[in-house]
Amino acid sequence: MVEVSTSILSMQQGDEAETILKLEKSKTDYFHIDVMDGKFVEKNTFNKMREYSEYIKRISNLPLDVHLMVEDVETAISVFETIQPNIITFHLEACKDENEVIQTIKRIKESNIKVGIAIKPNTKIEEVYKYIPYVHMVLVMTVEPGKGGQTMITDMLEKISKLKTYIEENEYDIDIEADGGINLATAERVKKAGANILVSGTAILQAVDYKTIIYELKK
Image (cartoon, rainbow, N blue to C red; front, side):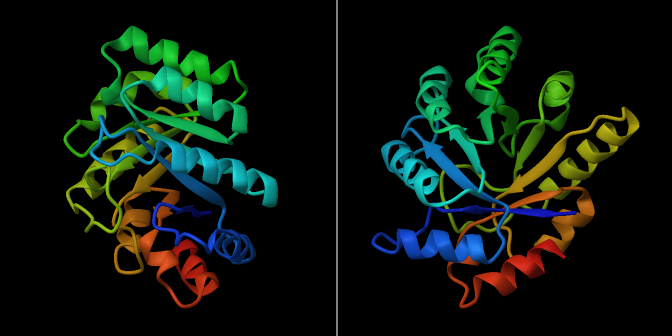
């Protein structure tokens, strides 16, 4: 069953409560929290996403799917673990070596939070294979991280497909999340490639009816 994680990056200021409750009623599976530091990516959403996360936890029971696009992963984990998200995903490219990746995975697990590992479009999918036994999810960026509303890079479909094949051949039980440019025109190809969690923000938040688009993305 495909799940939808709605990115709140482009949520309209002043409409937060209404938007969050509408998304919950429309059966989104997660709220996707795009945490950026202005260094790893150009945009800085760190404080805004912390505030949104705390607010969501007060008014909704839906799980938080936290995506760290930051250089200082350790500090970001310390901040966002207090909000008790369902999962924290960090970027492979933010770690200087294999040991740092392993230590980051352990750090998140020690807080009883699921772990995801993300890769940018230019990173080869094979680079995450050695970490798959230790994580709950691999997030494949289908656009360059840092901006909402981008067009999906279709070459990433092959990367998702390759990952799916590797997971099945080795009988691992982990999720594949795809993030970037996912809408009704691209979702079918992403699902067919093997992703079972779709991150969508602009396409959902700009839709007239959240419930219909979320249903269409899932089916």
